[in-house]
Image (cartoon, rainbow, N blue to C red; front, top):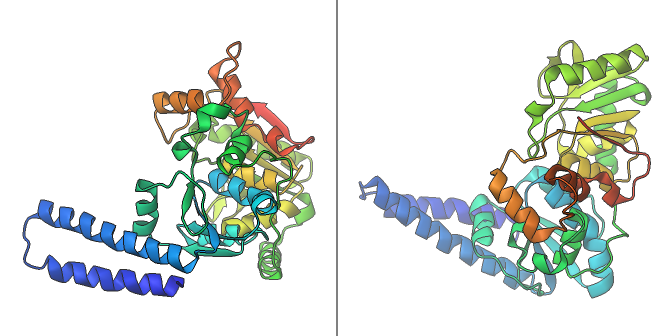
Length: 336
């Protein structure tokens, strides 16, 4: 099934739903019918995907960048162990572009939110050909058996792998290389002398590292003769140049820079998978995620990861998220 067919089915489904609810005036009833209607629609579409790709391993990738990138890097080892072809399902084109960078993934499909949410609500707990499997640590019921050292091991265990040392790096097509090269020319920067600063994170609380913190870092490198570029969709950031690219292009841009300074985030996982050593990663002093409650994070940590009781929660969090999992020797990691 092509993405166009899925899109057409969604449009037809929306029209059908509107006709069915045309004379239902209760907002509560309309919402309930909508939920049931689209759940049936999504389930039917998922079954069609399973049927069309019955000879494929079908993986749905969790949307945070680290949770997406790590499984992609393990697909080569999965195919070495189990053979066959791999289809991955993602929830937007930005993530599809990144997944396509990994040679061992045979096909990438972008599915709409109804299908994506249906899979999330109806997980399969066994990896079988022609049957979707969501690679999502929250759904890994067998995690307590292993008590993984870090996220890379956790996802390898979820994919039934015993070896996670031979991860696959993305390969950038000429289209992406040329697009980034043109933007570098337009910006008028010397990429070999460029320090790229990415100060935002979806997991750790970015506000724990202040604006002044990043501006001081920028000034330090500027005094050493480097050009500073911030990762931002603003036209400029306190007088510094900015760039905001689709993730696949941003990764290639970073591979060309002299150095990348960043708060620890899933974006860093992608850079680590690329084996980049030009990284300077900063961790906030308090490593509670901003996306979930402290209790939820503690429960998941205790459930899925090895707990070293002689260390604090933050020290344990550093271990399970450290870039050392990618066997990088020159990356600088600092807790602020």
